[in-house]
Image (tube, rainbow, N blue to C red; front, top):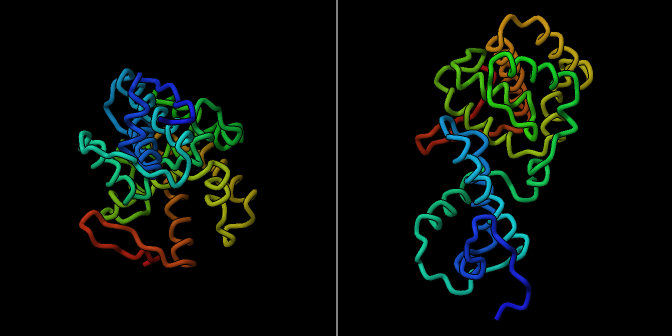
Length: 246
Protein backbone atom coordinates (compact mmCIF):
# COMPACT_ATOMS: atom_id res chain seq x y z
CA UNK A 1 0.00 0.00 0.00
CA UNK A 2 1.49 3.33 -1.01
CA UNK A 3 1.86 5.66 1.95
CA UNK A 4 2.05 8.95 0.05
CA UNK A 5 -0.91 10.35 -1.81
CA UNK A 6 -0.42 9.84 -5.53
CA UNK A 7 -0.78 12.80 -7.88
CA UNK A 8 -3.95 13.37 -9.88
CA UNK A 9 -3.01 12.96 -13.53
CA UNK A 10 -4.23 15.28 -16.28
CA UNK A 11 -5.41 12.40 -18.46
CA UNK A 12 -6.91 10.46 -15.60
CA UNK A 13 -4.35 7.66 -15.86
CA UNK A 14 -3.73 5.16 -13.12
CA UNK A 15 -0.89 6.78 -11.18
CA UNK A 16 -0.34 3.72 -9.00
CA UNK A 17 0.02 1.45 -12.01
CA UNK A 18 2.36 3.86 -13.79
CA UNK A 19 4.52 4.21 -10.69
CA UNK A 20 4.88 0.44 -10.62
CA UNK A 21 5.80 0.29 -14.32
CA UNK A 22 8.37 3.10 -14.64
CA UNK A 23 11.58 4.13 -12.93
CA UNK A 24 12.15 7.79 -12.03
CA UNK A 25 14.52 8.17 -15.00
CA UNK A 26 11.83 6.78 -17.31
CA UNK A 27 9.31 9.32 -15.99
CA UNK A 28 11.74 12.21 -16.52
CA UNK A 29 12.60 11.02 -20.03
CA UNK A 30 8.97 10.60 -21.08
CA UNK A 31 7.97 13.96 -19.63
CA UNK A 32 10.72 15.66 -21.60
CA UNK A 33 10.05 13.71 -24.78
CA UNK A 34 6.34 14.53 -24.89
CA UNK A 35 7.08 18.17 -24.13
CA UNK A 36 9.69 18.27 -26.90
CA UNK A 37 7.24 16.82 -29.43
CA UNK A 38 4.54 19.28 -28.39
CA UNK A 39 6.86 22.27 -28.81
CA UNK A 40 8.83 21.43 -31.93
CA UNK A 41 7.17 18.73 -34.03
CA UNK A 42 5.76 20.12 -37.26
CA UNK A 43 2.24 19.52 -38.60
CA UNK A 44 0.59 18.63 -35.29
CA UNK A 45 -2.93 19.81 -34.60
CA UNK A 46 -3.46 22.14 -31.61
CA UNK A 47 -5.53 19.40 -29.96
CA UNK A 48 -2.72 16.85 -30.26
CA UNK A 49 -0.15 19.33 -28.95
CA UNK A 50 -2.36 19.93 -25.93
CA UNK A 51 -2.64 16.18 -25.40
CA UNK A 52 1.14 15.77 -25.54
CA UNK A 53 1.62 18.56 -23.01
CA UNK A 54 -0.88 16.74 -20.78
CA UNK A 55 1.14 13.54 -21.01
CA UNK A 56 4.29 15.51 -20.22
CA UNK A 57 2.64 17.06 -17.16
CA UNK A 58 1.45 13.62 -15.99
CA UNK A 59 4.91 12.11 -16.04
CA UNK A 60 6.45 15.24 -14.55
CA UNK A 61 4.01 15.12 -11.62
CA UNK A 62 4.62 11.41 -11.17
CA UNK A 63 8.40 11.91 -11.18
CA UNK A 64 8.11 14.68 -8.59
CA UNK A 65 6.04 12.35 -6.45
CA UNK A 66 8.38 9.37 -6.87
CA UNK A 67 11.64 11.20 -6.31
CA UNK A 68 15.10 10.54 -7.69
CA UNK A 69 16.18 6.93 -7.36
CA UNK A 70 12.67 5.50 -7.64
CA UNK A 71 12.64 2.05 -9.23
CA UNK A 72 9.62 0.38 -10.78
CA UNK A 73 8.25 -2.03 -8.19
CA UNK A 74 6.28 -4.37 -10.45
CA UNK A 75 6.92 -3.84 -14.18
CA UNK A 76 4.51 -6.04 -16.10
CA UNK A 77 5.68 -5.34 -19.62
CA UNK A 78 2.14 -4.27 -20.49
CA UNK A 79 3.25 -0.87 -21.86
CA UNK A 80 6.02 -1.79 -24.34
CA UNK A 81 5.66 1.31 -26.51
CA UNK A 82 6.12 3.70 -23.57
CA UNK A 83 9.04 1.62 -22.31
CA UNK A 84 10.68 1.76 -25.74
CA UNK A 85 10.16 5.52 -25.95
CA UNK A 86 11.61 5.96 -22.47
CA UNK A 87 14.64 3.86 -23.33
CA UNK A 88 15.34 5.84 -26.49
CA UNK A 89 14.78 9.18 -24.79
CA UNK A 90 17.19 8.29 -21.99
CA UNK A 91 19.88 7.72 -24.60
CA UNK A 92 19.37 11.11 -26.23
CA UNK A 93 20.35 14.57 -25.03
CA UNK A 94 17.45 16.35 -26.73
CA UNK A 95 14.66 15.75 -24.22
CA UNK A 96 13.51 18.56 -21.98
CA UNK A 97 15.05 17.79 -18.60
CA UNK A 98 12.72 17.72 -15.63
CA UNK A 99 14.86 20.07 -13.55
CA UNK A 100 14.45 22.66 -16.32
CA UNK A 101 10.68 22.20 -16.73
CA UNK A 102 9.83 25.09 -14.42
CA UNK A 103 11.31 27.43 -17.01
CA UNK A 104 8.69 26.36 -19.57
CA UNK A 105 5.47 25.17 -17.97
CA UNK A 106 2.96 28.00 -17.79
CA UNK A 107 5.52 30.79 -17.56
CA UNK A 108 6.51 33.71 -19.75
CA UNK A 109 10.27 34.06 -19.89
CA UNK A 110 11.87 37.18 -18.48
CA UNK A 111 14.59 36.80 -21.13
CA UNK A 112 11.97 37.35 -23.85
CA UNK A 113 11.64 40.94 -22.64
CA UNK A 114 15.15 41.69 -23.85
CA UNK A 115 15.14 43.81 -27.01
CA UNK A 116 16.83 41.17 -29.16
CA UNK A 117 14.13 38.63 -28.30
CA UNK A 118 11.34 41.17 -28.77
CA UNK A 119 12.66 41.90 -32.26
CA UNK A 120 12.84 38.16 -32.99
CA UNK A 121 9.20 37.98 -31.92
CA UNK A 122 8.27 40.74 -34.39
CA UNK A 123 9.82 38.73 -37.23
CA UNK A 124 7.99 35.58 -36.08
CA UNK A 125 4.69 37.45 -36.04
CA UNK A 126 5.33 38.79 -39.53
CA UNK A 127 5.92 35.21 -40.68
CA UNK A 128 2.73 34.02 -38.93
CA UNK A 129 4.90 31.45 -37.17
CA UNK A 130 3.60 29.41 -34.24
CA UNK A 131 4.57 31.16 -31.02
CA UNK A 132 5.23 29.91 -27.53
CA UNK A 133 5.80 32.67 -24.94
CA UNK A 134 7.52 30.13 -22.68
CA UNK A 135 10.23 29.52 -25.31
CA UNK A 136 13.06 31.91 -26.22
CA UNK A 137 12.01 33.85 -29.32
CA UNK A 138 15.53 33.80 -30.78
CA UNK A 139 15.60 30.01 -30.73
CA UNK A 140 12.04 29.79 -32.05
CA UNK A 141 13.05 32.05 -34.95
CA UNK A 142 16.12 29.90 -35.65
CA UNK A 143 14.08 26.69 -35.66
CA UNK A 144 11.41 28.28 -37.84
CA UNK A 145 14.15 29.28 -40.27
CA UNK A 146 15.55 25.77 -40.58
CA UNK A 147 12.06 24.39 -41.18
CA UNK A 148 11.67 26.94 -43.97
CA UNK A 149 14.92 26.18 -45.78
CA UNK A 150 17.05 28.97 -44.39
CA UNK A 151 20.63 28.96 -45.63
CA UNK A 152 23.77 30.14 -43.91
CA UNK A 153 27.34 29.45 -42.87
CA UNK A 154 26.83 25.85 -41.76
CA UNK A 155 27.80 23.04 -44.21
CA UNK A 156 24.83 21.68 -46.13
CA UNK A 157 25.62 18.10 -45.16
CA UNK A 158 25.39 19.05 -41.48
CA UNK A 159 21.87 20.41 -41.77
CA UNK A 160 20.24 17.55 -39.87
CA UNK A 161 22.98 17.72 -37.24
CA UNK A 162 22.27 21.42 -36.83
CA UNK A 163 18.57 20.64 -36.30
CA UNK A 164 19.50 18.16 -33.58
CA UNK A 165 21.79 20.72 -31.95
CA UNK A 166 18.99 23.29 -31.85
CA UNK A 167 16.75 20.70 -30.20
CA UNK A 168 19.43 20.15 -27.59
CA UNK A 169 19.80 23.89 -27.00
CA UNK A 170 16.07 24.01 -26.34
CA UNK A 171 16.64 21.84 -23.26
CA UNK A 172 18.94 24.46 -21.68
CA UNK A 173 17.69 26.95 -19.14
CA UNK A 174 16.92 30.27 -20.89
CA UNK A 175 19.49 32.10 -18.76
CA UNK A 176 22.25 29.63 -19.68
CA UNK A 177 21.28 29.69 -23.35
CA UNK A 178 21.45 33.48 -23.57
CA UNK A 179 24.81 33.51 -21.77
CA UNK A 180 26.18 30.87 -24.14
CA UNK A 181 24.93 32.62 -27.28
CA UNK A 182 26.87 35.78 -26.44
CA UNK A 183 29.99 34.10 -25.04
CA UNK A 184 32.32 34.54 -28.05
CA UNK A 185 34.90 36.90 -26.56
CA UNK A 186 36.55 37.54 -29.93
CA UNK A 187 33.34 39.42 -30.87
CA UNK A 188 33.39 41.71 -27.84
CA UNK A 189 31.77 41.49 -24.45
CA UNK A 190 28.32 39.87 -24.08
CA UNK A 191 26.49 43.20 -24.24
CA UNK A 192 28.31 44.18 -27.44
CA UNK A 193 27.54 40.80 -29.02
CA UNK A 194 23.86 41.06 -28.13
CA UNK A 195 23.73 44.62 -29.51
CA UNK A 196 25.40 43.47 -32.74
CA UNK A 197 22.78 40.76 -33.28
CA UNK A 198 20.04 43.27 -32.46
CA UNK A 199 21.41 45.65 -35.09
CA UNK A 200 21.61 42.80 -37.61
CA UNK A 201 17.98 41.89 -36.98
CA UNK A 202 16.97 45.53 -37.50
CA UNK A 203 18.55 45.47 -40.97
CA UNK A 204 17.02 42.13 -42.01
CA UNK A 205 14.74 42.33 -45.03
CA UNK A 206 12.47 39.35 -44.30
CA UNK A 207 11.66 36.83 -41.56
CA UNK A 208 13.83 34.24 -43.33
CA UNK A 209 16.75 36.65 -43.52
CA UNK A 210 16.35 37.40 -39.80
CA UNK A 211 16.29 33.68 -39.03
CA UNK A 212 19.46 33.16 -41.07
CA UNK A 213 21.24 35.87 -39.06
CA UNK A 214 20.32 34.14 -35.80
CA UNK A 215 21.30 30.73 -37.19
CA UNK A 216 24.69 32.06 -38.31
CA UNK A 217 25.27 33.45 -34.80
CA UNK A 218 24.35 30.11 -33.23
CA UNK A 219 26.54 28.19 -35.67
CA UNK A 220 29.52 30.45 -35.01
CA UNK A 221 29.07 30.02 -31.26
CA UNK A 222 29.00 26.25 -31.76
CA UNK A 223 32.31 26.49 -33.63
CA UNK A 224 33.88 28.60 -30.90
CA UNK A 225 32.67 26.15 -28.27
CA UNK A 226 34.00 23.26 -30.35
CA UNK A 227 37.41 24.90 -30.63
CA UNK A 228 37.52 25.23 -26.86
CA UNK A 229 36.14 21.84 -25.90
CA UNK A 230 36.38 19.71 -29.05
CA UNK A 231 32.83 18.30 -28.87
CA UNK A 232 31.40 16.10 -31.59
CA UNK A 233 27.95 15.51 -33.00
CA UNK A 234 26.16 12.36 -34.03
CA UNK A 235 25.63 12.58 -37.76
CA UNK A 236 22.52 10.39 -37.88
CA UNK A 237 24.39 7.33 -39.14
CA UNK A 238 25.59 6.13 -35.76
CA UNK A 239 28.94 7.87 -36.14
CA UNK A 240 30.19 11.10 -34.64
CA UNK A 241 31.73 14.03 -36.46
CA UNK A 242 34.00 16.60 -34.93
CA UNK A 243 33.10 20.20 -35.66
CA UNK A 244 35.95 22.43 -36.73
CA UNK A 245 36.34 25.84 -38.33
CA UNK A 246 37.44 24.34 -41.65
